[in-house]
Image 1 (cartoon, one colour):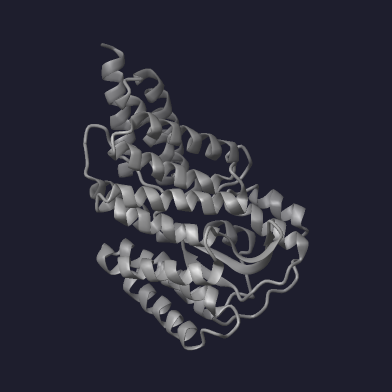
Image 2 (cartoon, one colour):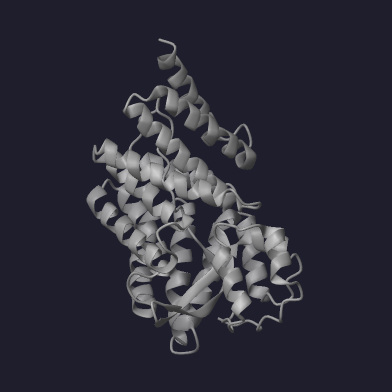
Length: 351
């Protein structure tokens, strides 16, 4: 992957933090920038589904339908899944490692509306993704992977290859071709483990996505194992109180829901909710951050209904709806599902 080295920032870091707030995904990027470490070439990556939604209580869905509904929620604005960043050298528990330090595209574009250091190929791919032209985006990422694979010993290509395969897999998922995504995710996971090592946050991203696909196939035990591994890798890098840990907790809760472990699921959703809401207290958030918060709140309310905690569930759903409406608009299916859940709790609450 090629790209010009970024120039020195012209704005003080404190000013950039004021513009962006402490975005859930951006904090490590600013911390590294402050230390002045030399980054790699700039990269574009597509994160994936990340958080499973249980949906509407009145429409008891299969695991596959729940994942498909979550995909459709994201596919309408796929640029929300895109992130821009650099590979940086870092130390974890005294050991040197590589970290993929990135922030969501919508946050990046607000901070750097005229990023002259961005490669033309990345600009082109971003526009393709914004147009939801998934076949063309797949061609761009496939071309990039072939270039990286042909020069796999050059620079940071050993790290980039797994990230590029992951993005390819996500694009197939968004296009509704998850069967093509599965081998790509498995290969991406293997490449990332070889490059970054086990229990690494970049490995955790692909473990989450592969786990979600296994969840859709009702392979809940295998999915749960991957989500737990992702949680360990994320905690090792960022600590136990980082909002990225919340995504693994949410998905662990969904597995427990389908496995009939209601109390364990409730605890996971509560822990995820607490981490996300703590991160929301600052000024600015990426749209995807807010979607994840609403998803976890909705899942927590769903679990409370299963446990017949109707009044608490209604309050949680109302909070989720406000977040959803702020990002998705009133007519989105996710908002309609949450309104349906509120109506359901009202019916029981008034009995």
